[in-house]
Image (cartoon, rainbow over all chains, first blue to last red; front, side, top):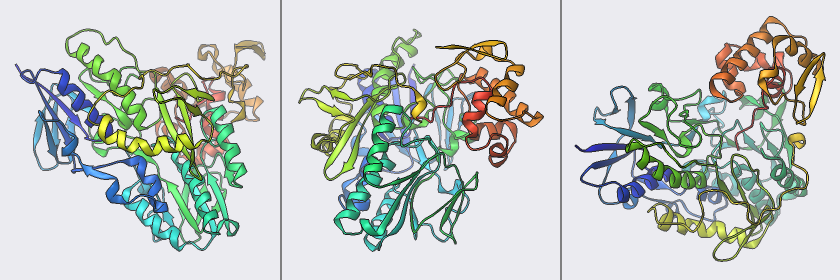
Amino acid sequence: MTHRLVVLGAGTAGTMVVNRLRRRLDPLEWDITVVDRDDAHPYQPGFLFLPFGRLRARDLVRSRHAFVTDGVELVLGEVDRVDPDGRTVTLTDGRRLGYDYLVIATGASPRPDQTPGMLGPQWRRSIFDFYTLDGAQALADALVAFPGGRLVVHIVETPIKCPVAPLEFTFLVDDWLRRRGLRERTELVYVTPLSGAFTQPIASDRLGSMLAERSVTVETDFLVERVDADARTLVSYDEREVPFDLLVTVPLHMGADYVGRSGLGDELNFVPVDRHTQLSTAHRDVFALGDASDIPASKAGSVAHFSVDVFVDNFLEHVAGRPMTRAFDGHANCFVESGAGRGLLIDFNYDTEPLPGRYPLPVGPLSLLKETRANHLGKLAFRWLYWNVLLPGRPMPLPSHMSMVGKSVPATPATAATR
Amino acid sequence: MPVTTLDGHAVHVDAEGFLTDPAEWDESLADVLAERIGLTLTDEHRAVLRFLRADFTARGETPTLRRASLGTGIPVKALFGLFPQKPAKKMAYVAGLPKPHGCV
């Protein structure tokens, strides 16, 4: 009898999963279907560069079909609902897909509609996001026309995709304004719901110092209640106000609406799963991978990559009726652009915060938590690796589990007191 | 983890004073913890704390402010009134739960 695996979402995680599993599951025994609403796969890390005119939109989008291997059916359509008891996915055009196993990999999306006042008359006039292709392009036009003033970079609430991206944007816009002679005329403000620049103490200290060196004012513990578009002001629940001439916001992130409609999500439509296996806590035949799950890790491509490594082996055991023996450790690593052609690298997991030191690679080590030219070049090179190695599911020379090799452990355990 | 004595209760705490063993908490300790951060608990505070405790027991994680608001029906703005300035942290502290980690 043929088994049916249905994967919802042909983004980073979904594409890797179907390509990897197609090689591991007998085509005579397993049908694999992947569903996405369109045939445009964006390289999301590239969005960061669009506002500065350093990449064009057409450099960042490719056909999903081209990256889904033969033997996997790509269905284009919008998911209306999952019936986990009837093991059926229904699309909005009425098509129904039965499954024996389901992988939810429909990611997370910015939702400006969730903050009162954000989608008003100032949206894409003085209020922008750069987490969408059209948002990042619109911001590019706004920056070219920006005469100086109060430029506010803002995060509504965590979790967000690529948690370092708002910091990177701040570093890059500082560099960009300097080059154009506008920095003196611009007040740069970083508004965050966190108590510091970042969540983890050592990285937060380092990145916080980098903001201070660049004369960026940081407004912490700011939970936005609404945007007063007329007054061009952010208003927090505790009635603080941050005025802006140009607001670059990272809206609230949510999982897909069908996840909520199907009763599979938490309050933000993220799917509750076991943090080590990513098996749904409610259904033995449903997994969630990538940004769609509620694991307490970064919503980042590196997490999708490392967790898919673990998932593929576990899935084969699970469908054979055996216990899953591998455990994902929450491993993430991220390049952090810091402007002027330099960048940092951070590497961490559920239990170990980003630490300074060296990150060993076959081509030579990269520096951790330190601004270098090599890290910037690594970030640029990654786009090629993404399309040519990562998505096709070819082996990357990076272990999926975080390693302590090269890391400097602080003499006294870091505490959160700095937050 | 250091052990400290709060009004006759011996409890394990982290560097910031958050309880590290939620089992060491009870409602009378909540009053002591609240007093240490300048709060006097009302029934509304206690309803929030009960939700936090129950949700932590069910999910193993300290709920976010958004989740606490949905779970208790108390608007976020009112939670800021009950636990001023840093409600998510203060709620967790008084409920004897780990500090909520802003997801990395």
